[in-house]
Image (cartoon, rainbow, N blue to C red; front, top):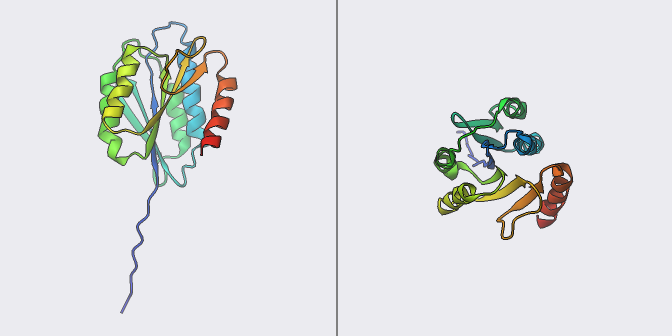
Length: 171
């Protein structure tokens, strides 16, 4: 006789959602948003979790890295090739995230600014039951009542360092 004991294993699966819309032709904030996404993609422990990078490039895309999938370097390669979109398609992005919501532990949403379209995007995710933390990259000081973390364009490294210390103290 053989005794076989099955153990249920669970690996957290995180979403990294990148807003690729940029109507600013200099694309400075867009490039900073990509850099922030890359910094998180590079630091996730992909041996113990999965990371789904979700973004719009003509259409909705998802690239997964982590345990048993692509290596995290693949996400960095994808991010290096992401270019800004000039027409927003937050509906397609929200539908992509909502299709994957049951698999996701939580999401980090990196937004290129703050406006009514982005506010509606976050409301759609919230109504859909997606657990997320938004990070905004924009000019000047954070708008009042902003539902997340603000990184000032041109000072992203400074603000990201402060954000990481705030996040680590929260947990």
